Length: 368
Image (cartoon, helix red, strand yellow):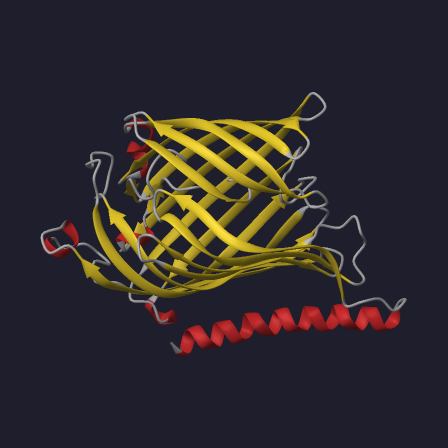
């Protein structure tokens, strides 16, 4: 824990220094407000995902720019939510994406606490359709501090911390009867390097450009972790305008892990962002590739539609990844514009997988 506090203090210190520098600029240049509001959305939360079933609570999304940022700069975003679900889950989360000093510094991450009911299906591609339920409680700290190099590249440091405690599991399930790394929970604490190449025209609903994220993560006992493992991932999206208003969005993702990886940190398929149409964690292993395509078009006024298709596979070894079984899913989606200025959408998706299972999703923001 002392290593966690030391690293967190360092990252917060860097963040405070940048904010202080921004404030100093406001004293030198023409006086303006420290923060210029772009949009503020506060509303009761009502959502549905296969992992939570129906959930509700209260949430807010604040998009803003610092007072001396030009109006054409990317807006910063802070989201706060408190929710409770049909599966007796508690979600308290604060994700953030903050630009300062005319986009020279970029801070992103998440602070949160979760009491979450998951399903565990096993490891690999040959897993049953029905998973076993387990309950986990954990605080979460995820922070990235990046500096811009050139016009569109950001590079910096990452720190992640989860204190993962499994409070309930099925007596005759795999987690209770087999020796699985992380089967009794544990602390994940590690650092790494993260780099972004970002040429998108918009943050929340891009219509052209690309965003490619390279990240490494070294989870070590010397940083207070209970495990030693490493991760290398690439997540890339391309946005291609079709005609005047339609967009073809493409996303590719690879995730490679090595070492003693707890099962909850394995690369996985499913959920509202990666491979819609499968339950989150339906397939997981040390290596993964995934491809998603989505065609987006406006209908009228604040309404739009999407069609999406996905493919992915997992494998225990990198040299067998391309020869393993490939899983497919796809579906349709409705979009309702919540903020005209920053193009924030309410997302309603219906995904179906190759096994014939149908999964609805009702949330805010695009999948990628």
